[in-house]
Image 1 (tube, rainbow, N blue to C red):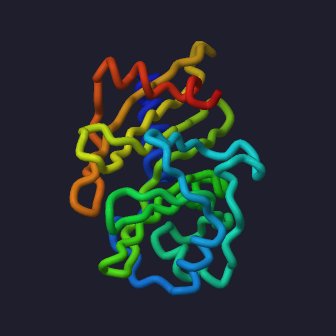
Image 2: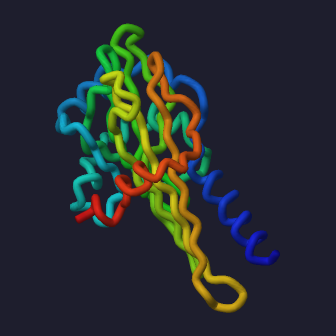
Length: 212
């Protein structure tokens, strides 16, 4: 029972740290969009693996975004979160929507990788989507990897996530929780993440294999 309560406490903290506001960010500053395009490179491969940067030199460490844009960038996040904003890559989700992968403030520092989605027809930003993250403290660790890939065969990129966390129980043994979630791209937004037990997907989306 104590293990279950401890696990539930970690999960609640983890989810709170990963949440972003479920609302549009609004109209962008043209200078911000220009800077993101200038400092990011395009990813076109069929399956894009996204993981929290292990160092600033990591591919997802990104290039620092000018702090003059922070009034827009900070809006979707909890007040008091510390850390800067960095852009690494951009990817075409479907015609008319481009996603920018930004490293953003998370639980302790800028460890989260969010997808900032720009709608070209509306010329506005959608609420950012957390794709990957990693953090921990003391006796527990959390890691979430993401993949932007067409899961349902409609030619648009969906989001697959592998969420894992480890903790030391009262017997000083390591326990682990592992889950796979799928969010489908539907009409300019992702659906709510749904837990998947598909053995084929579980065998494909293994973080350790994709990080090699």
